Image (cartoon, rainbow, N blue to C red; front, side):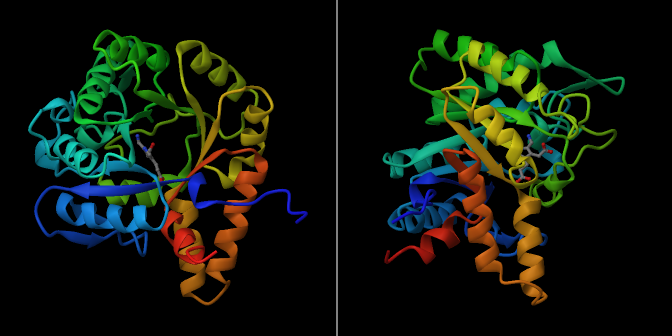
Amino acid sequence: MVEETRLSVKDFIFPLFVIEGINQKEEVASMPGMYRRSTDLLLKEIEECLNLGIKAFDIFPAYPESKKDRFATESINPETFYLKAINKIKTTFPEACIMTDVAMDPYSSDGHDGLVENGQILNDETLPILSKMAIAQAQAGADIIGPSDMMDGRVGHIRTALDQEGYTDVSIMSYTAKYASAFYNPFRDALDSAPKSGDKKTYQMDPANLHEALIEAELDEIEGADFLMVKPALAYLDVIKLLKDNTQLPIAAYNVSGEYSMIKAAHEKGWLDGEKVMLESLLSIKRAGAKVILSYFAKEFALLNKDK
Ligand code: PBG
């Protein structure tokens, strides 16, 4: 009765990986229990999750090297499997809320979120590429666009582009305070999307900085974001709290791949109780002020709470 914070299955967005093909399912080596699935198998997984009460999904594609180029051209190919998968999911389950990812890295031969020239990221030249990607995803049926790229000015650029194309109802969940973190490595394994050279420190935030997140939040809010996201979650609970106290927009937190893998690995070794640590971690993210939690634990949480 006196619990101040209570988790609900409705708090979650479940990130899932999709690959091309039929009847394909591969476990991500560094993320036990997480799979790359072809669209047919992904539909089954989503149906199961919907029956457990999970309403929202964030879908990420894994592309082979052969489809990548400097300009992430494949991302707007109308025949590409990612856009077809989004369309199939949305038409099969119109009640599901589908979030898509906007960044160049899954399609980029450089493995960066922006356009690379002579070892530098070209911020402004990247913006139209991102906007075209967002339009293609909205056209395929996305409800929420998730720009995870961290280019300056991209939220406003994408908002204007979506509105001009008539997608005024499609929301933007901005990766507002996305840190240059070592916790993303298992995800980069899942997508084969690690940078080919350099790192992401010129566009992702410095883990040393807290108040810089307020500048990012203010800009995203002015540019038209509908949600502000903090990522990773557990090492950045202070950032979640700070943003929560300084905006009326809903705060989302991304409980990232490395946070998932650490708990899974320690559980496998018998060093801690994975289920209890999962629940405590998720609770702390909500207690800090997140309204929405993106987590690879969403289904496990839903299964545990099935009969409650
Ligand atoms: C890339 C992107 C990343 C994640 C989501 N989108 C990785 C990165 O920035 O290198 C990480 C998610 C996770 O670790 O779970 N645009």
